[in-house]
Image (cartoon, rainbow, N blue to C red; front, side):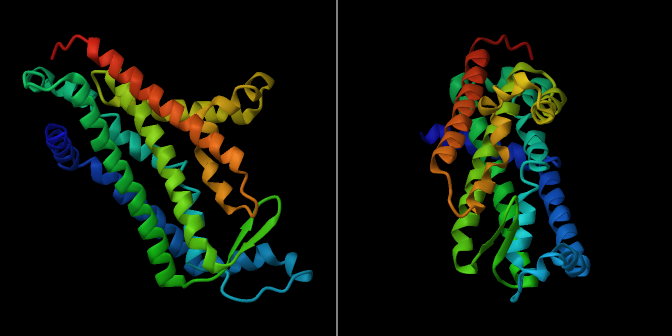
Length: 281
């Protein structure tokens, strides 16, 4: 266990000494800053336009443009932009070593390949966790600081209003679910990294797979409808389930189980392949 912790620390040092690691944090800061600035200056006009028809039948009071609304909007970027930022680092964890020609030196140490891969993935998971945590703190913290608190109005097929006192647990659950989704993305990029000797391939490959499957499944081919329930990409926006009055527990459990299955499968394939891989560099 002590050896594994040491390996994780070494891998974290490798991750955070690279400039690309901080691209993700910088990108999230810019995205959230742009969202908050846009809503601060133009949010009321847009909100009034949206509610123009509703105000004929409903009376609205209170601070509807608040930090919780900002956080909800920020969450919508979770399955759009963040997978790219996650793949940017996790796709380099194995392929980067091969590209740099350091694997032979690393494997001369009395450390098994499996333990090395586990340490690398846990270090990549730590980066992913910090990325999502940064997003949550920046989105909600700055949102509440600038816009204050209030009830949340969610526009879907229906209009749902959630009181401010029950929003913290809903957002906590949503970000926890989002963390699981991003861990699956990290595992996908990690698996592709095991097959490659160049980090560009796994990064682009992971993003291309997510975007490609999402587009194809969204188009709605009849044969894809039967596959959609078994594709992990179908569950990336599943955090939205926590902003429904009656949360479908069966649907939520299925979402979690499908993603855990992909997580185990991606890591399993990476470990099995890497154990037998010829290290030539």
